[in-house]
Each structure stands twice: as C-alpha cells, then as structure tokens.
Image 1 (cartoon, rainbow, N blue to C red):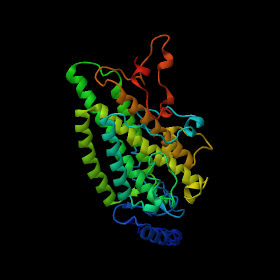
Image 2 (image 1 turned 90 degrees about the vertical axis):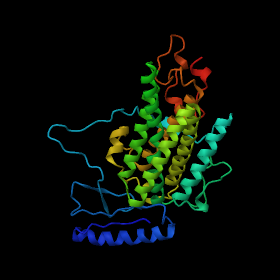
Image 3 (image 1 turned 30 degrees about the vertical axis):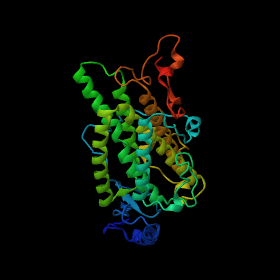
Image 4 (image 1 turned 120 degrees about the vertical axis):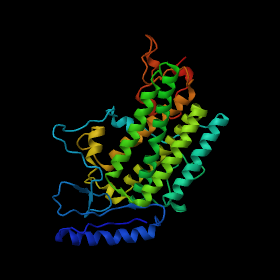
Length: 364
C-alpha cells in the first residue's frame, strides 16, 4: 500500500503541517485501491527544518518535504557532471503537434509485437490499480484518452515510475548486442548503437525526474527488480532472434507511452489534478537543466509535454528501424546524405512521423 514515513526529527511547526497532510493521503490510499500493487512510498520525510539543504517539495502535498534519494556527490574539485547526451530540445509547436497514433500491423511479426504490447498494457493497468471506470475506450486503446474517472496524482506517479523503469531497457539491450555484434564481425555498426544508447539514457532521465517527486517503497522496488529481470532477458532473446520484431514491439510500446502522457496532459488541463495544475507547482531542477526549460515554461504540463515529445521520437525511430535491414542499412537519423538527397534525411519530424519511415523513403 502507499506507505508514509514521517521523520521523527521534525520541527515543531512542521508537525502540525505533517499531521494535516498525512491523514488525507492515508484515506486516499485506502479508497483509491492502490493497495497491494502500487507501493510507492509517498514519503513525508520532513527533515529537521524547512531550511535544510537536503529537502525538496513533494508533488502530492504542499506541507511535506521529501528527502533527496540521489543527492549530488560533493567532491573537492568537480562542480557537476553534465549529461553524456545533451538534449536537442524542441519548439513549443513541435511538442503541441504530438498526438497519439497507431501503425496497423502488416505482418505476422507486427501482429505478435502488437498483441504483446496489449498484454503488457493490461498487466500494467492491473499492477498500478487502474479501475475499470478509469480506463479509456478499449476499442481504440492507443488513441482514445478520455475516461469516466481520472487517475489521481499518486496513481500517476506509480504508473510513470514503473513504466520508465522498464522503458530504459530495450535501447540498452539493443545497443549492447549491436556493439558485441560489431566486435565479432569486425565491422562498423553504421550509427545504430549511439541512437539506441541515447534512447535508453533519455528514458532513464525520465525516471530520475519522477523519482525526484516520489520515493518508491520496498514493494515497488521489488516489482521493478523482478520486471527488469524478466524484461531484460526477454528483450535479449528477442533481439537475438529478430531485431525487426523487437523494434516494432518497442515502437508499439512507445505508442502507449505517447497515449499515456497525452492523457496526463489532458487531465492536467482539465484541472483533474489540482496540485499539478497549479502554475506555481515547482518541477524538479534536474528536469529544468536536462531539457533547458525556459523561464515561464516550467509547469508540470510543460514537463510532460517534453517527455511526451521524447516518447514520440522513440516511437518514430523504432518503427523506422524495424523497416530497415538491420545487418547492412545505416541509421538514417545520424547519417549524412548525398548532395541532392538532403531532403530525405529524417529530422525532428520523427516525433510527428508516428508510423515511422519506410525503407525506400530514407535508404532508397
């Protein structure tokens, strides 16, 4: 269940705030039904004083402070470590143009990948406590975003933390196997490795941002551990057998991610999530630094728009990679094109190319 751990060392002024905040959360945890599957420790760890440098605001209450679960390591000489892959950034128009979409299966492998994703979606809904009245139209599961009842902020945190902990696996597995394959064959990889590892890195950044808002409890950590073990080995075997089907699977998985974050944006806009709809809500600083978010564009809605755009790029990239010859074709997203063919190079519109590029469009 959602457990709340209050620090024993709380300032007297914070004690009253803590009491008022914990009781509604306990009641909400009981009534929402997050019980057994969704053990995110919406931790109300108020350190000694509000002025402590190791505290930060927590997303579902105004009164509590949540400890930093991965504070920066202080060293004698190093000031900070920038990300290995700086984010390219998006315009506001590009982010707002992203919409849910679905690539219809065309082959048996596509159909198998799609059905596996639908099974994963069902299991995720079950594991994160999504009620029947909170589900969208199942006849159009990848494009419909309206439901009779919205999710709560606590449910959203459980869902996105669990999903992002899994989403960072495929790119790492694919990049690792292609790296080893390149070493064995004594040949270049033609740019696939970098794109796959960058995708994995990007998904991990999503996870780190959300864990700045909530600290998973022991049950959630156990779920993540088990899911990662199963998913890693499944992706490992799948990529060895058929990289094409695996990339199609990831493309369908990213379709679900775009759908999920589109629904979250809509619920924020509708005011169904009052704390996240508040323009004064402060998002984690790690998000501001990674996406280089401008002043005045640092609300929770803005953050989700950036994350949704990332997922849309992954959607288009993986559907495209699935259409290519994984042994010989170069990665069109990082390749330089011949004079007169520059217009063939896919750019940021990969986010809008929901079904991916066909091989003849980018390779010839």
